[in-house]
Each structure stands twice: as structure tokens, then as C-alpha cells.
Image (cartoon, rainbow over all chains, first blue to last red):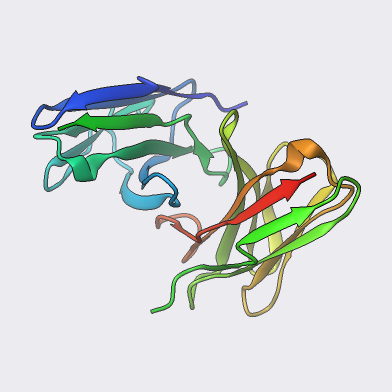
Length: 111
Length: 113
């Protein structure tokens, strides 16, 4: 079945620093989505990547889709306390419409 | 516009009972997906409905079922509840389930005792 790995599982970041979380798939993807879930909340859609090598930015967040469409990354610059939460990647393959979530990267920010 | 509405928010059931959870998607959204979230297993896909038809199904036993009505509202049912079914059940809607992201509801927290 579809395997989606996110690393790291936990990320402790000093406020103001940058960090990157990665999402890796065992199969070629048709698209990838990123979500953020605050503690006690529900996942909130951030962005969707479709094209090979695609890069999209949202303020301090930069999302990238790998050239082979098997991996993606989320880079956050100048981390703030509002960035606390779990970041999930969710993938779809050409074989099906099922949106499969990775295990998430839980981000904790030290002020 | 109103978001995705899930009812009830909290539910406590006894082993062996059955439960029905409800989801009202964003107006105009035709795709509705259900997920089970637990600390150990993360977000697990249950099923997706589009225009009243089940389009995709996850790897859950037949005790888990769902349906979608003509107004896109969806329900999921779990029969013969087990302790391991305790989880947050999330519903998510999308315009077409293909080209757009999903909007999640706040979930139903089910506790089986």
C-alpha cells in the first residue's frame, strides 16, 4: 500500500530559527497537499503541489515538490510561536483518489 | 460561508453498541471524506463519497460504513463498537476531491467504554 514517511517526527525550534520538514513517498505522486493542525484543533489546508519541481511560498512558508514527484518539503523561516502545531503532508497517486496522510511533524517552539 | 459541521462533538458509547456520526459539508462541496485520528495511528482514511457514491475506501473492517445524501451531507456508522474504536473522527469536504484541498470539520470525539 501507499507509504508516506514524514521526517522528523518531532522538531524543537528556537523562536527565530528556520527549519525544514520532509515528506517521502514510495511511489510517484499525482499531487501532494500540506495541512497544519494546531493542538486540540483539526487539520487546516495550507497548499497543494501538482507539478514536478514546483515551489510555492506563503509568507514565511516555502513548499517544494521533488523533481521525481516522490517527495516534498516544507521550510519555515524565522519561526514564531504561532507556528506551533503538527504539519501533515497528504498524497494522492495516479492509481486512486484516496488522500493518504503522513505521520506528521510535530513542531514545538522555544521562546 | 459556513464551514464543515460535524455532530455530535463528543460521544460516549459502550462496547457492542453502534453509533452514527453526521457531517454537513461546505455548500457546493460534493466530495466528503472521513478519517479516524488516534495518537498511535495518526490520520487513517476511512472512505470518500462523491455524488452519493463511495469512490474510495480505506482498510477498515466492514463494521465501518457510510453514506452520502443528495444534498451532500454524509453519515458514518460504526457497529459493534470495540474499545479500539475510541478516536477523533474527522470529516472533510472538497469541491471535487481532485483539484482542491479539503476543509475539515472539528470532529467527533468518540469514547468507547
